[in-house]
Length: 240
Image (cartoon, rainbow, N blue to C red; front, side, top):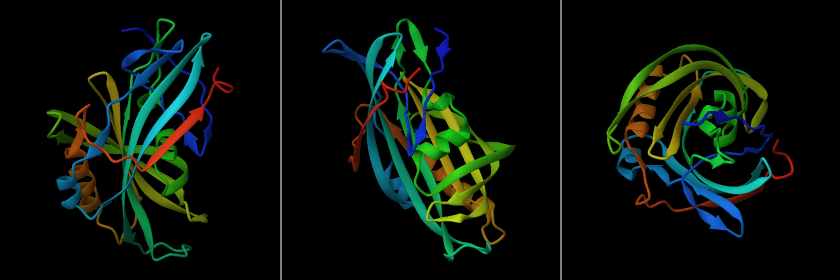
């Protein structure tokens, strides 16, 4: 495998997601597209989470004088949880789980970075709308989950963190961030869960909900997703 090259990326609402699976050359522009990803409806029904959106991101980039286009998919799930935290306007805060599929990009003979290569803070900022301004602290452990449809066993890394709730930016709260990243065929998959660290919330129960969603992950060309957002981003002026 070629060494992976890391590109600079700006985080301005949405961070560019890089990816890979060569699909052809159109008008001298190389295109890379991931396969869709989602949590199966049956797995969602086993939890208190609801599907919020599925986004298709098409991004224009340039590397070593070559232009390329990459397409990735983000599906977000969320639920409201009651809390005993002070200084928050609302009596509930979101728990969010996002699943991401990004292709492998090879340009000018180099394999470029994917979202899975980025810091967990960057992943958390870029794929969900419930939290912002993350500060991840120590890794507090992890746990393994069997992804049934993909027939693979993967492990979460769990971090203690602080963040602000998106609709209450004046209040910083303690939260937990679960991150798992792994390769599936030509794509890189990421699942990230974020929820408050609060004595009113049974941590093992929330982790069980997140595990159920991960276990129900479906990914591939035959996965049928309804696209709620189509985002086009041109990074050709800011890539290094």
